[in-house]
Length: 99
Image (cartoon, rainbow, N blue to C red):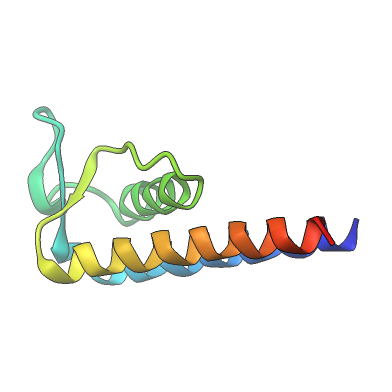
């Protein structure tokens, strides 16, 4: 049971880490909704953080569907890095649980 909690803790850590990271580099992302402001000109700080927390959670969960998309090569690299970390955690977890 300790392994399960450690795995969940690692996932939560990376979700929060990347949400803060995406928030800091928010200029590299854009909303895809027609009714909202582009490039976060009219969003409050809380709205912005919740959007990036949702974005990070959907990537970490393997869903990846969201209203945000990267607009630069750096945004794409950050997303790829989080996806590779997520895949690695899953592979390691499967290996550890099958021992």
